[in-house]
Amino acid sequence: MPEKLPDTQTTPTRARPHRRKIVMIGLDAADLRFMQSSLQSLPTLRRFLQGKMIHSLQSTADLMAGSVWPTFYTGTLPADHGIYHHLQWDPHSMCLRRVAADWLYCEPFWYTLEQRGLQVVAVDVPMTFPPRLTQGIEVINWGSHDQLSPFAAHPKWLEQTIRQRFGSQHPMGAEIPVNKTPAELERIRANLVAGAQRKGELTRWLLENFPWDFFITVFGECHRGGHILWPEGSAPQSMVSRTALLEVYQAVDQALGQVLEAICWEDTTVILFALHGMGPNTSQEHLVPKIMDRVNAHFSGTTQTLAASQPAKGGQRSVFRLLRERLPARLQNVVAQAVPVRLRDAVVNRAVTGGYVWQQTPGLALLADLHGYLRFNLQQREQHGMLASDSADFVAYKNLLYTGFHSFRIAASGAPLVKDVCFVSQEFSGHRSHYLPDVIVTWTGAPPASHIQSDTLGPLTAELATGRGGNHCPEGFYIILNGSSGYEGGPFPTHIKDLATLVLRQLTWPAEQTPA
Image (cartoon, rainbow, N blue to C red; front, side, top):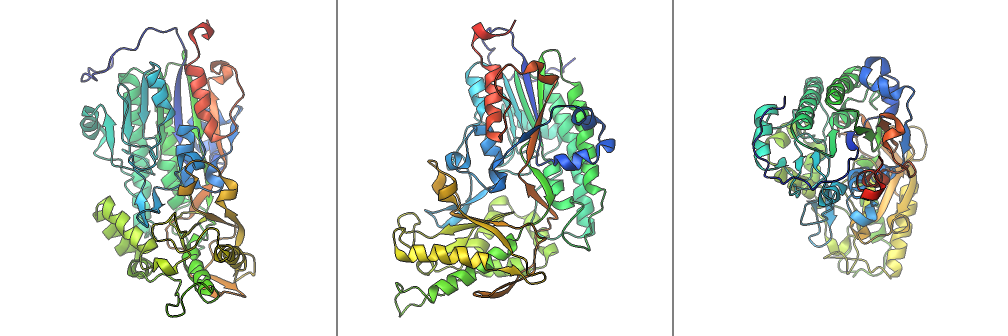
């Protein structure tokens, strides 16, 4: 029997016709191909990935990997919700700032469910904001890979209860994007395995002890493990054990089995899903800041609008960037783990945006993790804008940017570095599109390069030093467990933004349309 819990101070929902319940279980950035190749070691997933209808999902991760969770929970595209990363460019303050409830707030679809009288439990959905549910249960950032704010829960008393029963925080902790030692890699593996077990225990406890019509929980261990423990990392001398990531997936698989045992299948539809996947790291993002320095310097020597007495340097002169490039990874990791999040954010901001003379900077590289994100420094949009959007200089700069990035080749092979240079205004349209990068640079799929060469911009050298052997691929999937009997009408979604519609359609149909 469920234990007696503190009063949640909720009010009973109004009487309503019987309807099926829905549980959504997210496997954050879990890779379907990796799981399918390891089914003999994943008994719970094997039950559902063999002979079941696996639905493929298109996602916004093809250009903006960090946008997938807001896209999912709002049912809108990035140009409408405006979120593509946890730290984004703020044109008013000319810096990177963490996305927060007072800036770019988005409301998840389960708030609509509560407003319509349904009981909701939401656990560790990434990139969500501090709880605003009035009656339901909401746990944020106890064990999420991507976080916008500290751990919090509704009702408030639940925070202390979770800390006492399951730990003050998930063992995963924060990711510091630096290279790792073998000991650090083993510690990460062990923490993710332990964290998956705890997440399963927390999820099952909430399932069994609180009323719900809609329940969503997300396992973040596959995401963190995929980045750091990918067994086909780019470095030939990779120190990652080839079984480390599988052990993380096995822990999630075991926890998933325990969660599924707590569900009454007679009246519940379970949706198992991943919004994007993971694969070997093919990012060349570590080269982008230096390419932008070279493009800006080249532009400075050709533009005619700058005063001759103030020649533009066009490049970044940031002590923080220099320290991040040269400070030993182990020391960076120790320091970053010891300081508050706000201080880490400040250091990252200074490394990315510090040292510029804005009146002489036509564009800059933003923080990214897979593709290259670029921002134009435009008048009347940026606080200290340089270029007028209707000027010949802006056209010339865009052309130089496009041809400059495309001109680079990997020195070792002579192969192109860049697949495409996408101008976001041509790809996305929405009321928050101005918060997105102006340009997204995609890569050809080659392993991360250290030396590149351009006939016009010269040679460049930079080392990938994020500690990530794996990175995102855009393909997601979902499975409706319990067959299609729990799915009432309408087409099956093919894009992550349409999963919200699937749930809303199933749980909020008019009473007269409720199946017998």
